[in-house]
Amino acid sequence: MVNEVVNLSVDYRIESWLYREHPGIRPNQEKSIGLQVQMSVGGLTPDVKRATPRLVYEGSNAINYAYLRSVGIMLGQNLVRDYTDSAIVELGKRLVEPRGGWPS
Image (cartoon, rainbow, N blue to C red; front, side, top):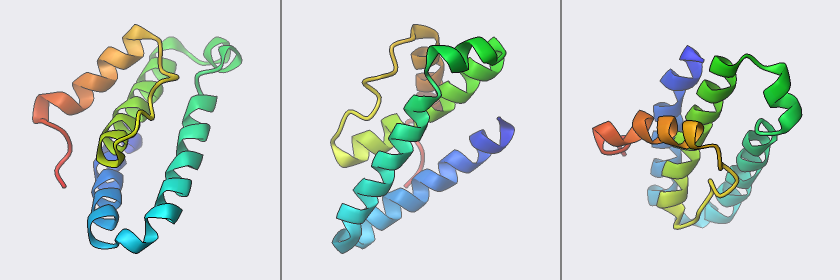
């Protein structure tokens, strides 16, 4: 999970830079992000929740929420509509919002 936290701001910077500097690749970027959403939402299933320690389940999904929320804001899309667990949502918001979001 530490790796996820460290890499997410870098991943966001890359996505943000690509979005700003290379508008011609946006359709491909949006497809790639769509795949990331599908993979992340796959981690919300009841089977995954049952098989994963609570701290890991909530922490990992909160990190995914934070990243997808930030990317969604950049794209003007709601990428986190499947995140309905309030513990995950609140932790995910706290990962980004105290600093005003990830730097571009």
